[in-house]
Length: 205
Image (cartoon, rainbow, N blue to C red; front, side, top):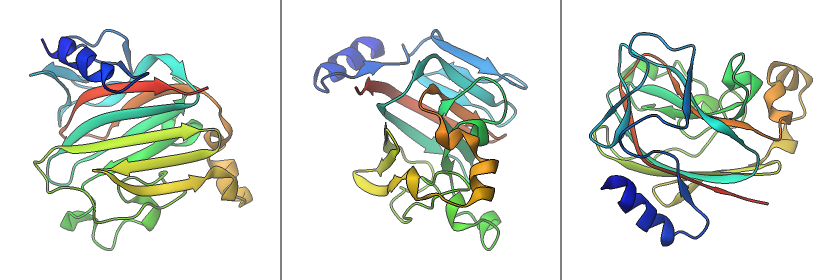
């Protein structure tokens, strides 16, 4: 039923294809998983607190628009890997778009601007203040088109950056993934409960 609903919704979003059938993890590959990894429950992909690892699409994507909804628990930390290889740390070998309850007290005075939700992790900071309260569903869209990376959260653009602005040799050495033009899309679990649904993608030329 949900997959049919997603197909119907995709018809209203020309070019988008669902990446999750609501029942199985077909089309996905778990890399470096621990505990139960990721599970499927109530038409959602769930990263349980005792699970996690990287859950990647089997297919690789270069230029694309990736749309999904996510629900956080207090202090939850996850990420969206883009243009990532299966091997190595996706935040560096590819790119990680931060998924984080950055308003939790545990992060106050601890994280850097480029670690807040929606940021290109450890590289480019996103605007803050547009995430819904913990326990509510958020809508997010990540667009990767050449060197331009855009993140729209609940209808608001919180990041719109050209990767070409990154010139520091140390950053480029630490993040070789910034130069990648294609790779897998994935959920990067960090030992906290996060849920995802309505996952779809549109490939760009």
